[in-house]
Structure formats: structure tokens, C-alpha cells
Length: 255
Image 1: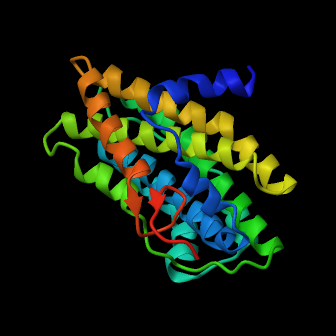
Image 2: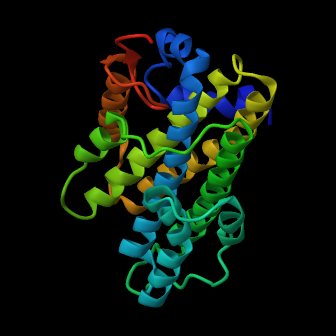
């Protein structure tokens, strides 16, 4: 499948493209550090989101502890500055099986999708960190953008709708990431362009997995909720944003 074919469903799903003003700002050399730092944390947050869904809905208690231990070295590095790239590479792989809960019919389906997603996001975390180290860009704990937080704040608070809404939000976050990686690859240096291009297939698959799970779990059609979050996501991406991050909106100011 060509990248054009791969991106077609992404573009059909998203209700707007990344603003040109964001791309202009992202091309500035002085923005590279924050883009990579934010990308690094986004990979961890994606893994954490998938792990939450597994622990909350799909896996048994022993598997829940296994998942916590899997992510711990990455969280220690990100939040407590404990660890290094070598120890993180050793921690990438999950060495135990995840066992599904017998009281949730979709457990195995969620486990299959989310364990693979976590594995890939943690590998990407290590790849981004290596790029930062090679370029002398220090890791700093930066503030989160409004993007994912606002999407999640608009999820329903009752089950099963909250699960369905969070899966739809996950689809939009992965789709937007895929779209931005594709656009950035046209403007950055060859090494970064190759890296961003290598992420497209996994991000596109993550988007499709989240959307499929949302529809499978829902007892009714999800079109209206998809449309609701699509409109909100487009507003966050296209409206003025005082912050500049990987998922931020149209820049209000330039540096």
C-alpha cells in the first residue's frame, strides 16, 4: 500500500488539515527541541492510555500488575529522570502473557490491539530519545498542550459510553499524529523525514484499531459521537493557540 492510499482514510476521518501557520512554525530550527520533547511524552501517554483501557476493562489482576511493571521504567525516566536509553531498550518487551477477564466479552480483542500498540509506542519512545541524544537535545519535563486533555474532558461519564468515547478520542489522536508526521516529513532533514515516514503505518493502524473497537463495543451506531469529537478536534487544531506543541492549534505568536 502506498502512503497516499494509507493516508486517504486519515484525511477522510479528520475534519480539517493542519494549518499552514503551524507547519511554518514547526520548520523553525528553534522549535525542534520542543517538538521532539513533546513527541517523546506523547508516545508514553499513548502507551499509558492503552494500558489504562487494558487494566480498567480487559485484563485480570495479575496481568494488571504486569502492565504496571512494564511501563514503570519509562514513567520513572519521564517523571523522575531515573534511567537511561540502555535500560529502556531492555524494558521494551513484555515478557509475560496478558490474561483477559472472563466477565467482559471483548477482553481478548482489546488485549490483542492494545498490547501491540503499547509495544510499538514504547519502541517509538526509545527511537525519539535516541534522536534527541544524538542531536544533543536534553530531555525536559514540559507541560501538556490543551489538545488531548480537552478531548477527554468531553467524554461521557457513564459506562459503556465513556469507554466508547475514549476509544474515539484515541482514534482522533492517532489520526492527527499520522497526518502531522506525513506533513512534517516534507520539510525536515532526511534523518527525521525517514523516521516520521516510518511511523505512518503504525499510527494509521492504531487509528483504525481504536475506531473498530469503539464500534464493536457500542450497541448503537457511533457516527454521531465520531462527528462530535471530529468537530471538537478540528476546532482545537485550527483555532488560535498560545502554546506550541506537536498537537497544538494555529500559533498565536512566533519566536
